[in-house]
Length: 308
Image 1 (tube, rainbow, N blue to C red):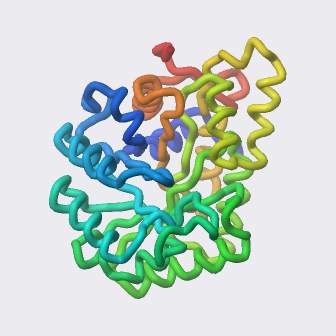
Image 2: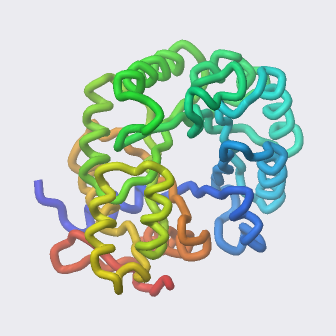
Image 3: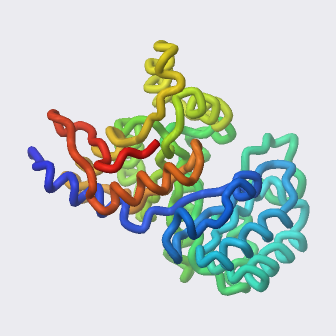
């Protein structure tokens, strides 16, 4: 099935409509006001890195709510010292920041460095604390290129459990993935997920606008797998290390897949603003509006307004 550029554009806009964003407490300090970059009501995930103070997460969530965003804090199981601390933190983000949705993850911590009774997101869900505090919309992690902290067999079992949990409760679960740099590994992963019985909607992670050098640094830290070959090919040219890259070809590939395969589980895009929120948000809004021009082969595009 050959798609016209108009059909691909429609699929791109469907994916980008209501895109979500992400911030860390540290990067939030560099943003004067989130309203300068994001539309009111935008979902903004607030990360929690190992060794961080959750009070910083609470403060950023409150700020985001005050600046008309919808904060979504990460709850990283392996960094939570006790069930009481979990409840205290859930209660705090709900009461202080109006949080009504969260992301529950294991967290990038090795088995020997787990600080409390929780080792995975399933244990967090089983506590019933999110339900107790009226949090029904819950994101869980997805790994299109595998996870350095979890074997594939365990990932498959966790996926089955989460689907079953969504079916037996009134929780509204969705999958939020790590970022990748090529469409093909994501498409293969989604097809495998559907074959395994996944019915949870997938919010696919895309890297925001950043230099190749910056993307390489984040990729190494995050354990991104096979699609790193895209970056390493680019990095072979020293001059390209400082060139700003955007995920336009990757997005075109995903949009074509979504338009052609009715079983596609990808419903949304989650932007990782690795090179800063300003340029990533500006690019995302231009794309969502359809203000793009395809290249001759229809494999990529440029925004009509140059994003620097």
